[in-house]
Length: 252
Length: 282
Image (cartoon, rainbow over all chains, first blue to last red; front, side):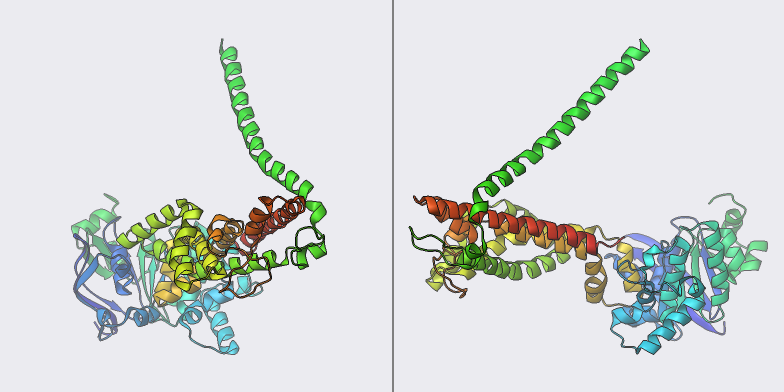
């Protein structure tokens, strides 16, 4: 596939003896929105966390096979550099409670000790918050703590914090599962907008969400990549029996 | 029949509630008794001269407790400077590595250390520091007090940091922030109010300790600001004056006790303020 940004070949992940991701081979194209879906415990979140090596926080985690960002093997890049290139947004909004909205957006720079001038910082904050569709709501309260915002606003603040680092890829781990329907739809619109500039990989429990927003969908089942295709194709005529059963609601 | 049953339960409930209220009220009585007694005995001693003058020989009026007050502050300050950084760092380790063997043993030793009688700490420090240096000293007193503070600081830091959700750590790590910065710039600031108030409470806890100072700081009737020499402190002074045969010294001991009490009350108030001011909504 041309334009590939992430390329997996026979990629496996374990926690201790538990084989969580089994021999996954897939190419993820640039500036696309790729959804990863599947039933609970199918390894989709672990797979996502392998991409920026966050799964390594578990002491008994290990991997095998190849996972490349462009030409570089992800497991040869230092995790600190890798995570600056691959941003992440979590299931529960987690703005830093000791920082203002402004500081939360530039937290990636501040915490990494990257020096910026005031003007540069102001630019990054405004730009990131605009891209996260939050600027209009918070521009007068930038000095307030991020935790005063509503759940949906907090999640958009987390997205702003991630894109402030100008990442190549944005990983989202069920970003709307803790939000109400209104906030969910505003985040979905935002993601569709963001994929022009970023490669987005979103783990979702919600099939409709995958169908609404993604270009391609990967369906994981029991640690295996059961099917990976253009979203329309997959939802209209799934090739794999397991996908078919999942989509038609025979199990969830 | 039904209503009787319910009435019986109501009576039982009210009785229980009454007992709980009564006992929580009883808990406050000792404090007020102590306050009342010390203020009644001590208040007439306290004036400006009492705070800034040195003690007078027996029989002369108008002596003060300047040496004990400054000595106490100095000994406690040095103890805090030793114990707080150590305690916070150890507490960070314990909260970050809950299941490691080393964490288990250091948690256990912190808990045991809290239970060691303070006089024993004093004797140990006597053999560690006073004997080799061949002199009683304020520094040895500070070390003894620091040993008493340490477990309190360690455990409050650990417990505060354990309550901070893992998601903030993950958020920072996912931004590519190195581990030590995650701890120092995200986790510790989130727990700052708990850590500070734990440290202040530890200071309040040791400010009135007498036993560990008996063989270490020893006491000194003169003004001394050299931490390598024996130094007076409020609890030591109260002890020495209270067991003396002179009425005037007894009165001064009451005055000093009141000053010590005020000091500790202020520290407790400060702790409450700090907790409120730096509390972070998680």
